[in-house]
Amino acid sequence: MSVKKLSLAAIAALLAAMAVPGTALAGPAEDIAAKSLELDMVWVAVATVLVFFMQAGFMFLEIGFSRMKNAGTGVAKIFVNFAIVTIAWWAIGYGIAGFGTGTVADYIGTDGYFFHFDQDILGTAVTADTTMLMLYGLAFCAVSLAVVWGTTLERIKFAAYVIYAVVFGALIYPVIAHSVWGGGLLSDVGGKPVMDFAGSSVVHLTGATAGLAALILLGARKGKYGPDGSPRAIPGHSMPLVGLGVIILWIGWFGFNGGSTFATEGSFFGEVMLNTQLAAAAGVIGASLVIYLKTKALDVGMAGNGAIAGLVGITAGCGFVEYWAAPIIGLLAGILVVYGVLAIEKRLDDPIGALSAHGLAGIWGTLAVGIFASPRLVVEGAGSGVWYSIFGDQSFSSTIGQLGVQALAVVFTFVVVLVLSLITFKVIKSTTGLRVSDAEEEAGLDISSHGMYGYPEAFIPQPEYPAGNYTPSMAGTPVAPLDKPASDQA
Image (cartoon, rainbow, N blue to C red; front, side, top):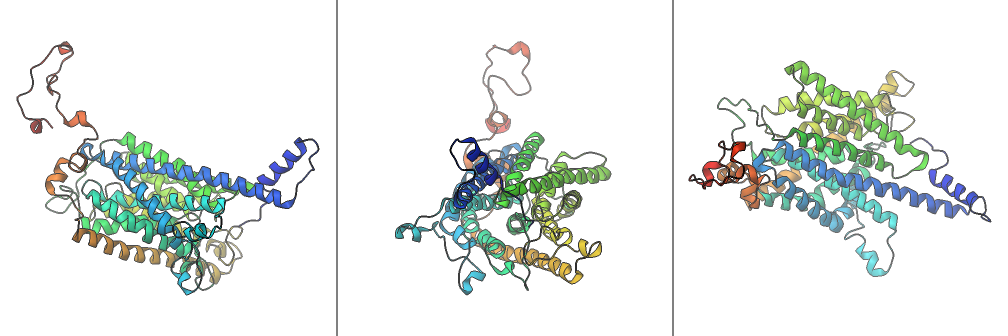
């Protein structure tokens, strides 16, 4: 990346020194370095909270796209998945995702299991910055897992969430994270590293591919396809909740991308965050224009998915591209997500468009680095984007080679995650079962899986106010209980 000037931590240390009488202008270099690290970790802590808050965004997004009878289960899913993936990451996942030694390090990390339990018993302290980075990595793993379930709304057994969360947090996501960020196979491909700044492929393509594996074995919701195989619309019950979910995700993404700088030096995180915002805005515009031209109406869900696609698309390149490239990447991601949703819906029942917004946009974002990566910002050993060989002075062989490496990352991620996820979901399907019964699906997962409606007043009849017969004049007037059974009123 670009060489930064004096860090904010160093500036703060100098100002503090000048403000305190009798204090030297600058303390020892070690003190400045320590304060710089402290400031960096404060920023990572803030970013971690923002990324954790994205769980609320996923929850509202999925609830909004669900029918009322399945609204409550989204809350339970987020709670349980967040809890399980935390323990799985702490115990095994962080160790696999991290660095390692020996030939095994090409595939998995060799240190950090049960978060440095080996060091604890030997009395060697684990540094606080390592702890903070471990927690930040957990937030990423939890986001990737949340992406998985968008394809499975309204018909998957709750036990499947529990079992798959363990495998995903302990093995599937960590293997992919290690391959790119932990010194694994994709960190050096013919001398060039894969560049994925914050996870277009590592996080989002991984989650979407796992969702595809679940969907292949799960099948569509009842009534989604007509006798001729044509898709039918099953509208979600609350576009305001969808909008709230998208906004929360949008805000959380500043921690997701900006926090991946891991430093405050030179305020580079500001550049990353601006790229993030530009791409998200362009994604909304691209998706809105396309869906309006196709339907003569502005579909709110498509506009929201345009924002998410723009965010996913820029995630890989947010720290590698110049400002002018970010809206191009976001605009094309927004256009792609509309066509992707419409095409995929013909064969696969993906209620929130996760395969497009996270999968296709994740692929595009990873490849976009190989097209637009700036010579000023690429990591050591990497080539810039092919744009700079066409319109600049960069070697075409180097730029096309980097694009090839980015494409290899897409293929590797898709194949590994799909195979491991298909195996896991197949085992679940053969043992505990993957899909609820027809009766349970018809009743809704809220009552059949959790014994409680997300919106009880919408399903439980109130005898005092018979449905369809209430008028203002009846206020305060007792009404005889209904003769019809509750099942007929729901």
